Image (cartoon, rainbow over all chains, first blue to last red; front, side):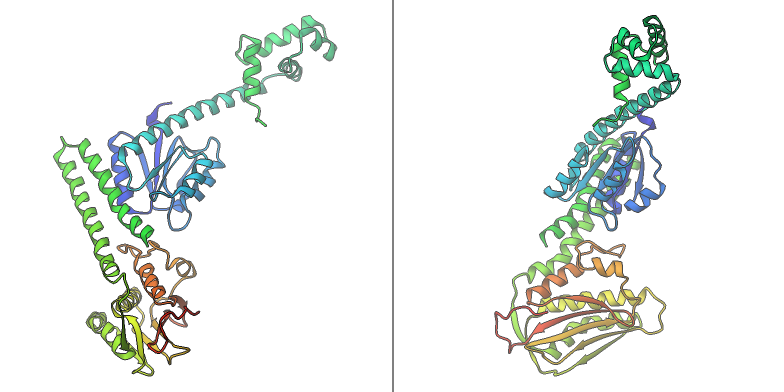
Length: 204
Length: 224
C-alpha cells in the first residue's frame, strides 16, 4: 500500500506536545491529523489507513479507552501509546490490547519515528490481508450451490470418488465442478484452494 | 507529588526534544528553523515556570510549624491579594470567629493554599458577568482542636465533571494552568492532618479545610 494514503492520527491533550509531533511527522513526509481529545477524534474519524499516536493520560476518554473503541473496527488502527515514565501497569494493558509500541515521555523523537514506521507497515499488511479476504468472499459468492458443496468437501480432504458418492454424481462431474471452483477462485492447486478458503473463515 | 511534577515537566521536555529533532531536519530552511527555535524557547520557559511554581512547595516541603492566631494568619495571607481583587472589582470579605485562637501550622504552606484558592476564585468570578463579585473567607469556632476554614466565591461554581477531577494533578480547565495548584494545596493541607474538599454551594464554589489549633497536641490524627 502506498504510505501516502496513510494518515498518522495524533491525539494528545497538551498543545505543544501535539504540535511538535505534528511538525516532526510532517517533516518526515507523513500526512497527519491532530486532535486535542479522544472525543474530538472519534467524532471525525472514519475508518482509514494509518496509525494512531495517543497519549494515555488525558481528561475525558483516556488513550486506553480510545484503543478499546478502535479495537472493535476491522482492521483495527495500529496504536502507539505515549505515557508518563515508568507507568508499567498501563504499558501492560496497552500491549495486551495490541499496541504496537509504548513511548515514554519525554518522547524520544527517533523512537517515535521508528514506531510510526512499524505501525504503518503493520497497517498496510493488515489492509492487504483484509482486502484479499474480501476478494475471496466476493469470489465465493459467484459459486453455485453445487460448486460450494464440492468445494466444502474438497477442503475437508475428500477424494473425487468420495465426493461423487456423497453427492450422488459421477466422478467426472465432480472434476468439472472442481475445475470451475478453482477457476472462479483463481487458484491452480487444491492446496491453494484449501488455504484461501480456510483463511477466510473465522478462527476458533 | 513526584508523578505530577514529572508529568508537568515531561510535557515541555517532550515538545522541546521533538521540536529540536524537527529543526535538525530543516537546517537549510532558516525561516522554518527559526520558527521551531522559538517554539523550543517557549517550551523551555514553560518548564521553567513549572519549577518556579513548585519552588514554594519544595522550600516549605519540610513543615515548619509555628503558633499563630487565626486572624493574623488569614489577614497576613490575604494582604498581598487585596490589590489584585480590587483591580478585578471583587470584594474580599473575611468572617473570622474567635480571632485569637492560636493555630499550630506551617504559615508559608497555608498562605500558599489560600493564595491558590483565592486566586482561583478571582479567575472564576472574572469568567462570568455576574453582578455579585465577592469572595468570603470564613473561619469557625474550634471543634475538637480544629478550626474549620472555607473559601467561598460567587463565581459560576463547579460542574460535577470538574468537581470530580478537581484535585487530580494536571486536570486543569485553564488554558495556561499547569493543573498542579490544587494538587499541591491538597498535599499541604494533608500534611497538616486535614483534608481539602470542594463543594458546590448555593452560588459559586466552596473550598473547605481545617487547621489544627496549638491546643491540639502534636501527633493528633487527621479528622474528617
